Length: 139
Image (tube, rainbow, N blue to C red; front, side):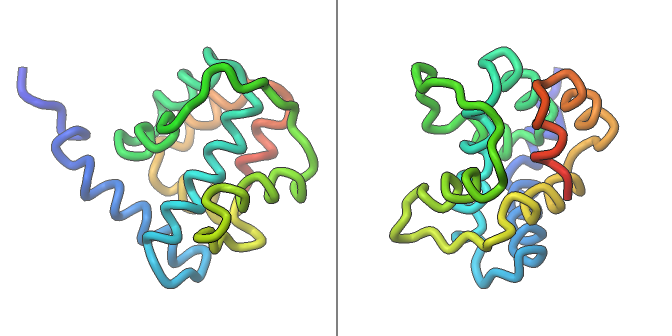
């Protein structure tokens, strides 16, 4: 069997997402966008079970899937969905001295992410996750 196309195009697809999210957030660099995206992913990941996180990761493109699971501490206690301000503080706490996430980072990442996933599959997975998951990913 040949290598699936999604793996052959993984780097290009990942970079296309970074450029899209950079432009959506009106940032100046894909490096900044990378940290912002990872912070948003970690804030979300902390609020869902391991099983739910795997289901969520499976609908992401390969590069974003890898970023979603990177640096995961499976022993970290699960949090509940909080108000947007508290979750944004978490996003901005990742590599704090080099984190230039926007005040609307969660919304910015959600908006760009939806353009790079199968939106129907994305919404179907979110509907099975705990209360707050769908609101988190509203663009």
